[in-house]
Amino acid sequence: AQTVTQSQPEMSVQEAETVTLSCTYDTSENNYYLFWYKQPPSRQMILVIRQEAYKQQNATENRFSVNFQKAAKSFSLKISDSQLGDTAMYFCAFSQAGGTSYGKLTFGQGTILTVHP
Amino acid sequence: DSGVTQTPKHLITATGQRVTLRCSPRSGDLSVYWYQQSLDQGLQFLIQYYNGEERAKGNILERFSAQQFPDLHSELNLSSLELGDSALYFCASSLYNEQFFGPGTRLTVL
Image 1 (cartoon, each protein chain N blue to C red):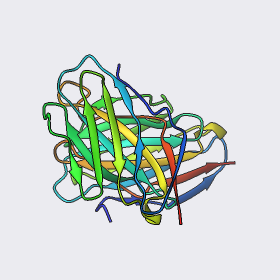
Image 2: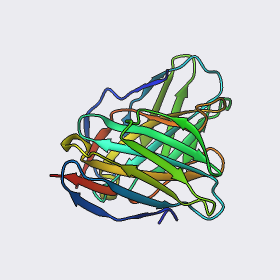
Image 3: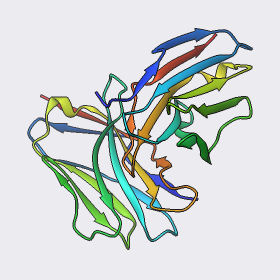
């Protein structure tokens, strides 16, 4: 079974600064997907960024980028130029790329990020 | 707006009762997933349907059941409710490997 671990329960950052959220995972699969989801106070789950395990290039989406280290099973999220609207709970998630559990998301415990003005 | 709709938004009921949560996926999405978010268990996968058929099961209690109808909407039925079933229940849909979540149904069992 896959597990996802987020070791930082809470983080804070000043507006316009950069912050990195950590995530590690455990799997015996070779093909899979990794995601970061954002959950603001509204509780809506919003997809921030995704990474395919077969791609060596790290995914980037505007101010959000990841550092994917497959051998280390590490998948961190970097938020540049932090904005007040980035304040939210962030979840790291894993999904197999095939098999009977294809598509099912396994989530980490979440990291609460607070951006201060 | 993800395009996934869930009704109702809030549900308050008593222990022992039965409720039905409804989900309409994004147009064209064949897969529907149900997740439960609670304070003590975090976000957990419950069950997945693909084009009307059950595809995968997670930590879903026997008191819970789900189905996906020919028009692809899905319902999650929760029966013999207990206090511990109070949670936020999410539905998500996907066509390939990216899931889009609905706004959730907040269930409170008193």
